[in-house]
Length: 40
Image (cartoon, rainbow, N blue to C red):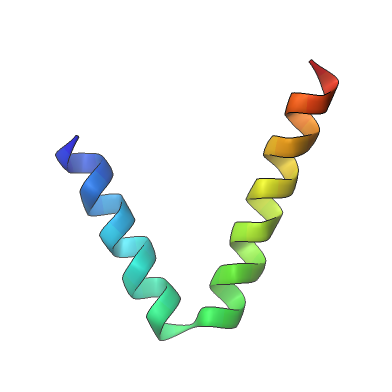
């Protein structure tokens, strides 16, 4: 649980430091997950 919290905090810091790049990366991951769900 704490590892997950730490990762979330790192992602949050990364989002604050470079929002555009972070959100592009985040949307890319969401798209991949969405495709995986559709393919099941």
